[in-house]
Image 1: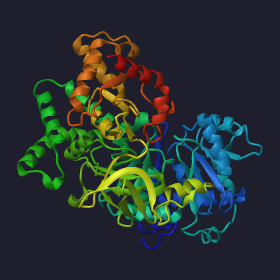
Image 2 (image 1 turned 120 degrees about the horizontal axis):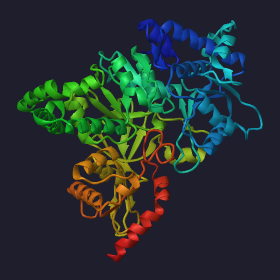
Image 3 (image 1 turned 90 degrees about the vertical axis):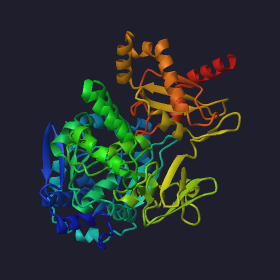
Image 4 (image 1 turned 90 degrees about the horizontal axis):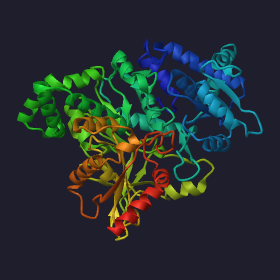
Length: 590
């Protein structure tokens, strides 16, 4: 792989070593449209020529606002071959953030996928004094169509080698704006070298049996984008799911070797499986929960006893085999990132012979810093794996994780002050995460530095540790620990309403609405018992003393979650400030 210097070198490498009938595929209106390697490269080259014909040059910025689909890749590779840079736009961006990014990045051209997103984009563009060229992947009235755009490149005899040869590994590949939870979004400058170094270092963990992958996490985020580049480096066919609503159907059609995911998705899969298990009766139900409890006790592969493995083989044949079949039956491994994975979920999925490889990284690290692997010495539950071999990690005196290496970002765009705040004079990135390295080299992330808080008694609280524990309850869908400057920590709880509804039915409690059920004394008492059960093991000062049950789930659309489903704590705190104040005011009276 020594010939890989720039990300678009992946295309020649793919053609030379793999050249498959399905390099990439997308599903539209229930039908899969596939592209072979020759077709893929031909479209990318025509895209580049069309960009040149329409005035795009090296160092220009081209924005891309779209869900995952093959056109995303055509546009991405077409732009980078010219030394220009893609600016991915999350479909959920607010109008103000969208306007800020388009202006800050000096965007010259935009590709948008469908009419809904174009409607959002059109509003943002109303404030621009000069017109930005806009093209759409779907046919939209009065909007330039991408296939017509592509034709302008196909008709031009432009020698792309002249442009490619001018692109170096240090040139800007992409400008990715952070979610802006603490102010205006900042543009993270990532070079070809940043991404290629991460691809090369990460791909060694992938087994040879990995043949195909389905993709549904947003390509706008560097996590999925880097992994797709890695798939291409290994000759793995990429299938883009039609939507989150069709993901299970799409998985069963493709029967992939794996996919990337976030913990929230795995939590929902697990909760759904357990709910189905509860609906069983007699011996089947007993067998299901015997296997489940066995799975929750799973240790690292090298650490399980012979008797445990004997039982596990039975459980896999009788119960866990159906879990595998629900995910297509060919899963080699899943990759989890974006947030902390509950340790119990990692254990039970590994027990089910569906290995979940938890990793860790940031947009600024391109993104992978550490990740678990499939080999016996590469996996340790409760950690994010071993640090990639081409990176250096050290732990600062205050516990912050510092990272140095070729995948660390160049700078924040037009923001030297913000860059200096996170990159020190020795080249180490200050991640803002608190962690520790054990003697075997496994990295454990314990919390976000900025999210830890002190109670009024001066005790430190690490909310993520608590939240991960409380999420073990099947009745809790989302939870956020609060209490900075207060006497004790409390929690905002969003119920798993499907599970709660089933519990209420079993208890003979009449369900009227979400808003009313959370006020029911029996429901409140049930959640108190859940919190009391899960508080065990934490120090007295850490334990949740009070909680508030909320009637609505936190969502991306409501700006309460980031695109990777992490909590926007400041937003959630602001939205529930009065309830929190009242809770602590009542506690003083007690």
